[in-house]
Image 1 (cartoon, rainbow, N blue to C red):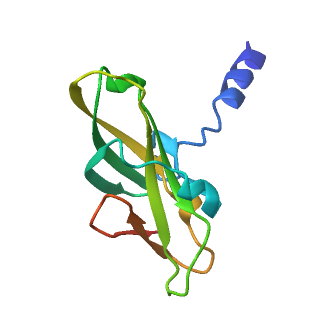
Image 2 (cartoon, rainbow, N blue to C red):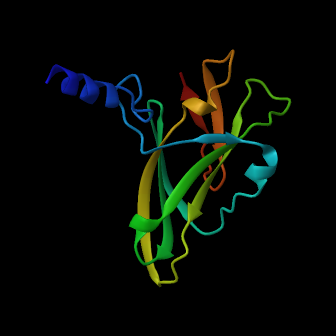
Length: 139
């Protein structure tokens, strides 16, 4: 019995999407090379809302389709920096939606921003394509 309890605690002890302050994000943002970043398509959705909640960025998009539950979303930041200080991140949202329905739906997903942190800074301005407001992620 004691061995079984130890196995259960060890198997549940680390969840990468649970942040230190107890907030859980749905997915993790990724920093990618500039060539991969440039390949992210952003024309198949509209960003309707973005909110920063600790280390999680909640993104709501709207797009046509049959069922938003099958949509896959990603948040990608480029690993290249330009001559600005403080260093900042350019970010794109990717939507994988191959549905050919005339309905229009919204979906909200939250992304862990900790991969977007920059050494030597305690905040990073984030500019999201298709969103007019700058987000300042503080950590």
